[in-house]
Image (cartoon, rainbow, N blue to C red; front, top):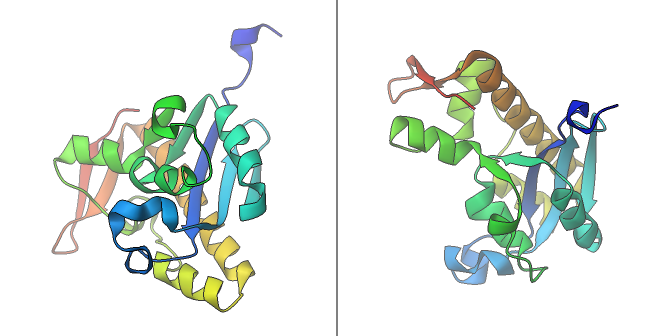
Length: 184
């Protein structure tokens, strides 16, 4: 097989934290929030994978092998949390597409993933990040993994929709469905 015929390895990525911004003295201290777990989906393997704090080095290596890392607010949040574990400058090292940033460029304002998912896919998120922190404190790891996997799936489906159709939809402030062009 010719090298250019190899399928591109897109890795979809999300992580959850152990602590809130309030716990660590504010949003400028994301590196102190600690990763409870992360989830990736790789198009090369077609598999979801859960990463625990003790495997964070393997996660970083996995992301480095990606042709593209796709997430939602992972440039401004998830990478910052991960950089509490590595000396690598992940935002400048990894080939990245952040759906939050791409959406903001297209519309001129930020949208929640929930708004995009409901309008584009017909379903939304299953929980909130604060739920994941509460579950962490209660020692309930399976609900965190399920929630994070679901967010990775929603991110993947939104990205694939934008690639296939050149657009996404969102719910505006009046809960009306709006369409916007997003060529990825």
